[in-house]
Image (tube, rainbow, N blue to C red; front, top):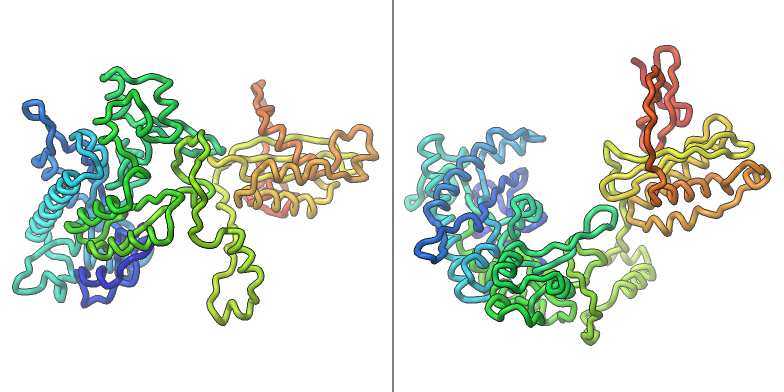
Length: 519
């Protein structure tokens, strides 16, 4: 996707301070250098009332929420601790806030309105124009109470037609990916991704989830069953589910059933009444062509969007959300450009000198995820003939195994085992499959081990592979026989070490890496 910088600057409330050159990563918050994001979102699913059996938007409640949220976000500016003085000066100078919405798709379901309909677009404009007006009213009230933002002079509000206001901007629509999970609502102004979907979680595990509104309706209407839910999970939508009435199929429409045109039109409907920008994904099927994408880009431009983000299905190896997809796709292959293998081939064959001269992009490199402050794991002891005792430690974080290292004591080849442990750890944290890593190290033979009858591993790397097996198979679970006694040990905190700290002259020393700490 991309952003339209000219449009961002057209709505820049403080042009006297400089031009906007970029946005935050999600594209919804255009900022000047050193400005900060200060965003909040209202859950529209909670802004509903029922009168005479008809559900409608509760604008009185929404008004109270908007005024409270604007005051709260303004307070955040003063209460926040900023990493740099320049950031504090700019954030408090323009006092930009961005109140937006989430739960829009839920609101449509509650009101019985299809996402891809003119009625939905009209509702989007009514709701967002109301939030825009009330956020401005709330900010003007704060200006009377607390004063205008310090950089008011020279701003777009500093004119004969202007008015005093506390915040240079008041509205933004963020993606609310994590926030909507906490609030248990649909994200931002996005449609439902799927009625039933698979969520990838830690340890390469997955969870099957069913939309709560659909589950309730299906139960109330009598067509809920385990078989129906499993069938829906195959595609994520209701299109081919005969037992679901057609009226509900229109209301519970999913992101991939909605054409790119409706995605863009929805974004544009909200953008009309948003100071900053709207974060929204335009979903494309895997069969989408270059022309399809171009059409969406041009429509976004014509409808006065400030940017556009697209996602073509299956364009990434692992997606945060994906439908089960048990049936193989029968779609014909559609050529939409060169493939990943061809890109790598071209990049590798391109001379480095030309690459620098002509600005060609070189192949991206994998970077390992950071090691967390706290890990959990186990240490397994092995005996190595000629090298003494060997301790292999396997640790995990929320994503699975994150490091493996060896402590060989004084007799082993510490430099070699430390190097192997570091390489294994960095490979795992870079996303290399643990089974592939394990396969590479298991079976490596060392003459010192083979020559000793009491040694049950073939080498130090083989011990690492077997320790990983031991950990993954759940053999590390055991009951502790707790007895009283003064004995305790300290483990070296150095990244990738894990050696045992020994007391020495009022200090603790690690014989493995040399780390020391004095009390």
